[in-house]
Length: 394
Length: 145
Image (cartoon, rainbow over all chains, first blue to last red):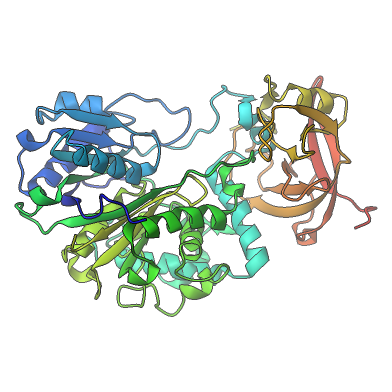
């Protein structure tokens, strides 16, 4: 059944901080910049903001968690951004960026607040897997770390080979996704790789890290923050920008069997549950989407989303992305902003920001032809994926 | 940078202790549901299939087929700088579809070209410290499909 909140909440503003690879400026300052820019974009003032929500997870398990340095949670923003007074805030470690959007929409519909700022601040930190201390592996890690399998890339490589062995495919074919993302990034001032075009040959020359995946199949780790402002549809209509209406949402909730790593769950089954819930919620389907923002922490995740959400059949994702079909001017533009692969790792918030800019006609050189509805899928489908649909009309 | 392979040691807990105790006797035991006969790995508090908590560890054949592999070409894992490149192998135990166990080739290298989905594998036990044994799998040259 269609969500009864459809069209009642809108995203009214978007703000970016600079995106940096090497910096000594603390992460909190990036969040302050993005939040201020989002409020300004919406035509609001700091005093109007009375709700806060974030997905503050640190960049790897066992990472230090100093607020304002390794992550930016509500506590930092309450004490440093001089907003509000704030009536409602939430610290959400599930559903990635989309989870924070969904909870904020619920809070707005419930009347808990009127203007919510949602942000995702990413620290650039090198993964140091395992939290049992050096030389030890506890819990589920005991079945993986002693075997030298430690980081998500290795697991994604194992899953992607299973996909290739089942359905066929080559590195060249996956490269079409990465090259498309890079091309889109060159049209986006808010992309780290805006000045670094690349070719299919560049992709094939990239170093293999955990085969069959190479360096360019991984998102670009950086430090930065993206923020958006949500409010009710009525209030949004009085603000500076055209509203991007929240038409529907979905959060994966299926019971999961014990497995060595989430990547070894069936991405198709997991993604299909999430996407079918999203299409039901929004009362729309894949054919209604003018563009798709599909999570690409690792390139194969985008293929899994394409297949499992009904844009193509199972096993046909690699063929689907060839010949410009996912280009800005193609039949289904995908990750028009460059994705996490070329804009940089922002854990899905870059995807949300782009969906807003597309449905409100503000994507400039990246503007797609038909932008009345755009979907965002966040996370890999088997990693408790989540999704939203944004529309240009309620 | 470490010059030798230094495998992190598994720390048994209340769920996994029977698995590691069996490994130390050079036996492969996997958690099985007493009610519905479903195998599961890693061990969990309840049977995923039927939801009961009547679980026990039972010996398995140690025979498996190769499901996937990745050649790790740069240091990614703690203690595993020296053996790069090595291969992580994902095997499916003969006892049940999708019953997956992870292992690696850092100690007993295999030719990557010889690896195929379905390659027959058998268990062996690697002593990584006194009285700490890790189940590992290697291609089973005498195996019958």
